[in-house]
Picture 1: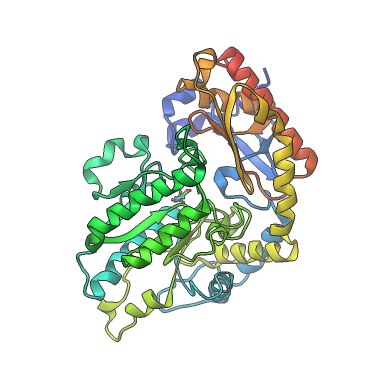
Picture 2: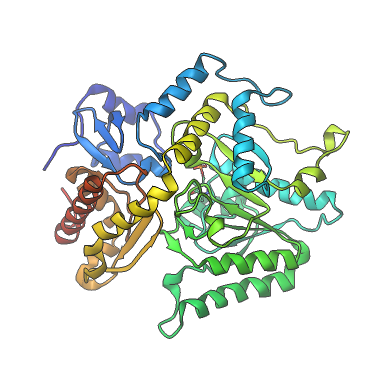
Length: 454
Ligand SMILES: *Cc1c(COP(=O)(O)O)cnc(C)c1O
């Protein structure tokens, strides 16, 4: 077995002093932390110089590789000018330019950018702004939110309230606002005798019924357009989004498109909503927007919402802020990333990359241990079947074991339950895509054959 863990003293010290996220620290007695000292392109290098192919863009953030020369250069250049200044009462060139570029990408439909640092905060901002808008327009009763079963919007209390992932909510139920949860349009859940279109209609009908009954109390509907990413890469039809947009219009309910994971070209178009030809009232961005370099999040919104807060009195404004709101270095990284999108025709070339991805994983389409092979642009996923014969897949050990076997094979994959997915940076060569697939196949084989790696 390849030893990817380092015995360096500083790695051991990480266990005591650093409380790692989304982790049971005790498990690191068995599975040592993976110590990364540098990265280049799609490769991460461990403290003992083991190369790992990053198939998940370092938590869905990295679009153009690690240590990307263009983004590095843009941050260096900005660093020589101004590293940070408050955004209340002050402005700076990168934040202006970025806001204008994002407005242009939405053809002016979402022309007002409100900044924060992490994704959950962008969601909080959209939720607060939505309810506040209704208060201002004489509909204060609109104080409830609708979210999807299996949806994920972050883990601060407001964002967690609209998140339906049991393991994250369990301990905090008492602290969370009550929300309406509608059925997920996840196409895997269609009944055997139901077409995809019929299933989607059923999911829309669930929302229509709720809106008809409760619309006077509903401020907003929040959705991850096309792919519920943390919810096992569950994919749905653009027609769902079109019909939800219509229902929201009919009942005066805001539509919040959480594009924190699916934005920035991940689904094939820059925004996932573009596949449905709709615009939401709020669109949240984070993760990829800074190229995966620096914490930055944005809640984009419309003229109508912006001008409801436009007033001579401070108290009529949207009084929400974070210390690092609109940080110039993060905005410079975002501008450099957007520049790469246009100068390197990224969306156009991703059509070919998505094809390569599909072909590289052709083995998984016919593998009898695998079901629900699915792809949306630069997200590809499949589920390992939940059968007695392959019972390794249904134990809670499956995901950590596959992760471990992946590392040993030299690829970073982080399955969600029995869902294996890749969400690579947009820079893989055809050879690297092949390598990613074959290493993942090796890891899947090992996990299903042997169970625990040690
Ligand atoms: C990751 C994610 C968030 C939360 O972003 P953080 O930066 O982790 O707070 C919110 N919504 C979606 C869809 C996400 O994937």
